[in-house]
Image (cartoon, rainbow, N blue to C red; front, side, top):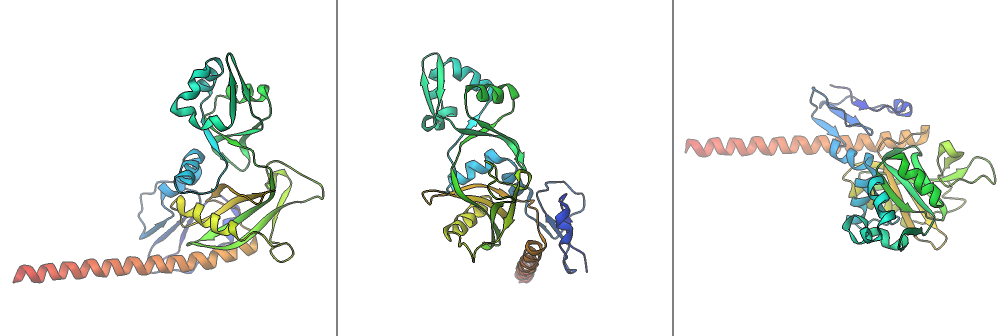
Amino acid sequence: MSKVSVISRHPSHKRLEFPEFDLKIRLRFGSRTEFKATKDIDFPSKEAIKNTSNKWRMKKLFEENGVSSPAYAFFSPAKMRRLLGNPDLLDTDDFSKWKDMLEFRYGNAILKFELIFKELNHSRGEGIFFINNHEDLITVIDNGKKGYVEQVIGNDREFRVHVCDGKAFYTDEKLPREEGHTAKIKNLANGYKYRNRSVSRPYPKAIRKEAIKAVNALGIEFGAVDVAVDSNGNIHVFEVNSAMGLRTKTARLYQERLIDLMIKKGAKLLNNNEDDNSSNNEGETSGQD
């Protein structure tokens, strides 16, 4: 029997307790660390985790798989400097998505604000900058970091939907800790808390469907999906977190579902091994004939 190896840097994941299994299992929360020792089951895959950590890659996969997400465009500081001085660059492939967000006049750029710039590997609200005017744009350019710009969504409500093995099993709404407090980025660092209010104020059920679609688009087995609903009822997926923080309740819920998923993966692996052995035996019998 072997203990499940949990790879994570988030302290809340220490709450997770798993039984011992006959198979060797490695469970990753946002980690793509290389290990010499192999495991029978190692999930999520490093490739899937990369899809969540590289936000530009995530946005492209959302687009390719029809996930409702804010309009975006790749942002290269060097190319943006040239763009400001040469409006003709707008017609290149790199800037095709800017057409809905930017207006140009010869010699300078008039931007339709407000936009938000996100570094490729931003996390926990860091590496995110709002562009409200030309000065903000220059600041982001001078920062020299590649990333993408996104249309700012005036969201009426924002949620975190937890998904595992193709099912949305728990939904929190992001609420201000103090009445009247507001912030453009709704997270713990900016004075928000996660609370389940599905009884007192039901959430749109469509957000669960969109959250599942987002997780599936990235090829990852589980994740916490940040999703908003605007004043018109439109749904916008911001991102999927593969190293989400867990409260006592969400840790217990993940634990239950991850154990079921491990059992399912283990059974599939054993069945595949039996099929391979059966095929080999048939081959040996055939050779004797």
